[in-house]
Image 1 (tube, helix red, strand yellow):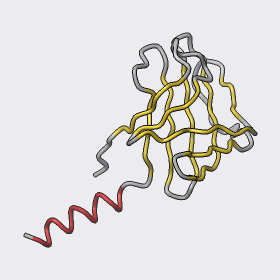
Image 2 (cartoon, rainbow, N blue to C red; image 1 turned 60 degrees about the horizontal axis):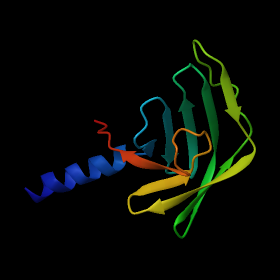
Image 3 (tube, rainbow, N blue to C red; image 1 turned 60 degrees about the vertical axis):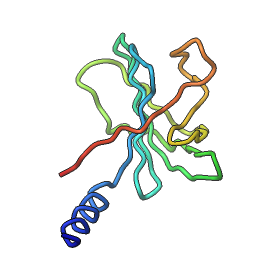
Image 4 (tube, rainbow, N blue to C red; image 1 turned 90 degrees about the horizontal axis):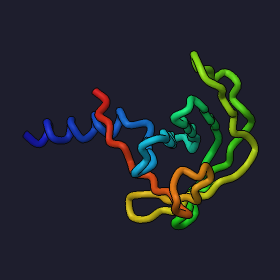
Length: 125
Protein backbone atom coordinates (compact mmCIF):
# COMPACT_ATOMS: atom_id res chain seq x y z
CA UNK A 1 0.00 0.00 0.00
CA UNK A 2 2.77 2.46 0.88
CA UNK A 3 4.57 1.73 -2.38
CA UNK A 4 1.41 2.56 -4.35
CA UNK A 5 1.04 5.92 -2.60
CA UNK A 6 4.72 6.70 -3.13
CA UNK A 7 4.42 5.80 -6.81
CA UNK A 8 1.43 8.15 -7.25
CA UNK A 9 3.27 11.02 -5.54
CA UNK A 10 6.36 10.52 -7.71
CA UNK A 11 4.27 10.29 -10.88
CA UNK A 12 2.48 13.60 -10.17
CA UNK A 13 5.71 15.35 -9.25
CA UNK A 14 7.53 14.10 -12.32
CA UNK A 15 4.79 15.02 -14.77
CA UNK A 16 4.31 18.62 -13.66
CA UNK A 17 6.93 20.71 -15.43
CA UNK A 18 4.82 23.88 -15.56
CA UNK A 19 2.22 25.77 -13.56
CA UNK A 20 -0.47 27.86 -15.24
CA UNK A 21 -2.09 30.92 -13.69
CA UNK A 22 -5.11 32.54 -15.29
CA UNK A 23 -6.85 35.83 -14.57
CA UNK A 24 -9.73 35.49 -12.12
CA UNK A 25 -13.17 36.92 -12.93
CA UNK A 26 -12.39 37.54 -16.56
CA UNK A 27 -15.20 36.84 -18.99
CA UNK A 28 -14.19 38.79 -22.09
CA UNK A 29 -10.44 38.29 -21.82
CA UNK A 30 -8.10 35.33 -21.66
CA UNK A 31 -5.01 36.30 -19.69
CA UNK A 32 -2.65 33.57 -18.51
CA UNK A 33 0.93 32.89 -17.52
CA UNK A 34 2.65 29.52 -17.82
CA UNK A 35 5.67 29.20 -15.51
CA UNK A 36 8.21 26.44 -16.15
CA UNK A 37 10.56 24.77 -13.66
CA UNK A 38 13.62 26.08 -15.50
CA UNK A 39 12.76 29.72 -14.63
CA UNK A 40 11.13 30.65 -17.94
CA UNK A 41 7.55 31.68 -18.67
CA UNK A 42 5.10 32.34 -21.47
CA UNK A 43 2.34 34.95 -21.37
CA UNK A 44 -0.82 34.69 -23.46
CA UNK A 45 -3.43 37.42 -23.59
CA UNK A 46 -6.46 37.48 -25.88
CA UNK A 47 -9.37 39.91 -26.19
CA UNK A 48 -12.89 39.22 -27.37
CA UNK A 49 -12.25 41.12 -30.62
CA UNK A 50 -9.47 38.76 -31.77
CA UNK A 51 -6.34 40.58 -30.59
CA UNK A 52 -3.48 38.52 -29.16
CA UNK A 53 -0.47 39.44 -27.06
CA UNK A 54 2.30 36.89 -26.60
CA UNK A 55 5.52 37.15 -24.66
CA UNK A 56 8.26 34.94 -23.28
CA UNK A 57 11.03 35.48 -20.79
CA UNK A 58 12.57 34.53 -17.48
CA UNK A 59 11.38 35.03 -13.92
CA UNK A 60 12.89 35.18 -10.46
CA UNK A 61 11.17 35.12 -7.08
CA UNK A 62 12.19 37.69 -4.47
CA UNK A 63 10.16 37.48 -1.30
CA UNK A 64 6.50 38.01 -2.20
CA UNK A 65 7.33 39.28 -5.71
CA UNK A 66 7.74 37.37 -8.95
CA UNK A 67 9.77 39.52 -11.32
CA UNK A 68 9.09 38.78 -14.99
CA UNK A 69 11.67 39.84 -17.55
CA UNK A 70 10.24 39.68 -21.04
CA UNK A 71 12.93 38.86 -23.59
CA UNK A 72 13.11 39.37 -27.33
CA UNK A 73 9.97 38.71 -29.34
CA UNK A 74 9.39 35.06 -30.23
CA UNK A 75 8.27 35.49 -33.84
CA UNK A 76 7.82 31.73 -34.26
CA UNK A 77 4.49 31.94 -32.39
CA UNK A 78 1.73 32.19 -34.99
CA UNK A 79 -2.07 32.10 -34.92
CA UNK A 80 -4.37 31.08 -37.77
CA UNK A 81 -6.27 34.34 -37.50
CA UNK A 82 -6.01 37.67 -35.70
CA UNK A 83 -3.22 40.15 -35.18
CA UNK A 84 -0.45 39.16 -32.75
CA UNK A 85 1.30 41.78 -30.64
CA UNK A 86 4.62 40.46 -29.36
CA UNK A 87 5.53 41.58 -25.86
CA UNK A 88 9.28 42.16 -25.68
CA UNK A 89 12.07 43.72 -23.65
CA UNK A 90 10.36 44.99 -20.51
CA UNK A 91 9.81 43.94 -16.91
CA UNK A 92 6.61 43.25 -14.96
CA UNK A 93 6.06 42.39 -11.30
CA UNK A 94 3.48 40.01 -9.90
CA UNK A 95 2.83 40.09 -6.14
CA UNK A 96 2.08 36.85 -4.34
CA UNK A 97 -1.07 36.85 -2.22
CA UNK A 98 -1.49 33.43 -0.60
CA UNK A 99 -1.74 30.93 -3.46
CA UNK A 100 -2.60 33.65 -5.99
CA UNK A 101 -0.76 36.48 -7.72
CA UNK A 102 -1.93 40.00 -8.37
CA UNK A 103 -0.70 42.52 -10.89
CA UNK A 104 -1.48 46.02 -12.04
CA UNK A 105 -4.21 45.85 -14.69
CA UNK A 106 -1.96 46.70 -17.65
CA UNK A 107 -4.66 45.91 -20.24
CA UNK A 108 -7.54 47.67 -18.47
CA UNK A 109 -9.63 44.51 -18.28
CA UNK A 110 -11.48 45.57 -15.15
CA UNK A 111 -12.47 48.72 -13.35
CA UNK A 112 -10.01 47.89 -10.61
CA UNK A 113 -6.35 48.81 -10.34
CA UNK A 114 -5.26 45.16 -9.95
CA UNK A 115 -6.11 41.84 -11.52
CA UNK A 116 -5.70 38.52 -9.78
CA UNK A 117 -4.34 35.28 -11.17
CA UNK A 118 -5.25 31.86 -9.79
CA UNK A 119 -3.56 28.57 -10.44
CA UNK A 120 -5.16 26.17 -12.89
CA UNK A 121 -4.90 22.57 -11.76
CA UNK A 122 -4.28 20.14 -14.59
CA UNK A 123 -3.71 16.41 -14.39
CA UNK A 124 -1.13 15.07 -16.79
CA UNK A 125 -1.23 11.33 -17.15
